[in-house]
Image (cartoon, rainbow, N blue to C red):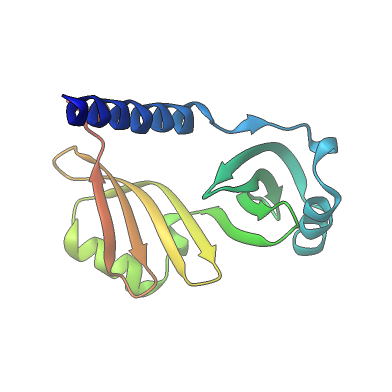
Length: 163
């Protein structure tokens, strides 16, 4: 009985932590309240960019800022640490701007597919492409593709499936 009580308590703690993580969603931050290091990093990397919004959240126990901006007619999402290190950038691009290897891989695997949204994601490790694709049979897929055209992840959006 004591073992069952301990197990139940452990399950409750794990559930509470999971719920707390889910509720600890990103909090909106006024652009003028961003840390100086974050603002300086953005100005250095994206001079003359128009900042549109910012959020603060905790990822892996560390505070990060997600900033949306427009730079040279492209929308960007930039993730930075609170000390101003850019850890991830996402840039909306046209499907026509995909590297040849990526475009060919998509055409080969999804010959009647249509790119609905394409984001070029750059981290310190690699450049990948996040693609929202409508297949010829009307399935909506979230794809993550590396710069060599290898599909790293494929997830179907069931709730948005076309009739």
